[in-house]
Length: 250
Image (cartoon, rainbow, N blue to C red; front, side, top):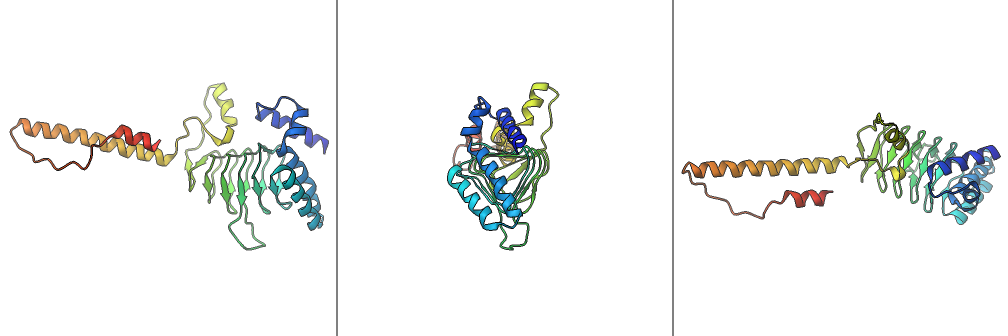
């Protein structure tokens, strides 16, 4: 028990620059308190002491603001940062070295009591603040879920999911630079460098394409007028401003 506790404290210090020492983490981090109490509640649950397990989890919720069902499975070195408003359902499974921020829900969408209703997180998964991961699917090893994303289907290993409903950004590739590679091992709140929303990228591409076509039409009109061919201009519904539209999409 104490070796697991020391392991938890060390992992928190590694991932949170605000953590100054082990005593501060032990006494002031509700995420750690919630995980430790969950281990007791889960032990009771496994032994068939269902009510006692639920009662301990309720006490943990009152003291920490984090609700973890005693039937949930939580691995080693799991860090619930800040944690207030986190809800983890009964059949949820959380792998080793995962990081979960405040306001996250690992919820179920099925009413079938005997089914796997809640998500499974692989090793090293990061779930950003306010994200909702809903359903009995898997979020693969090393995947990241951006803040406020709503995930309702499987997230492949090593990818990042953003948006509502969540869309998958390309697989994270590790840079050859050592400092950049180290930075990619952990991304606070699931935010990746240059991790633009794929929908935003698509809209930017369409806007730029329309702007290029309008410029080509202007050149063609000027050439026709230079050749003495008159072209009646249609009434413009409004001036097309590609830069303004790109700012709105950002």
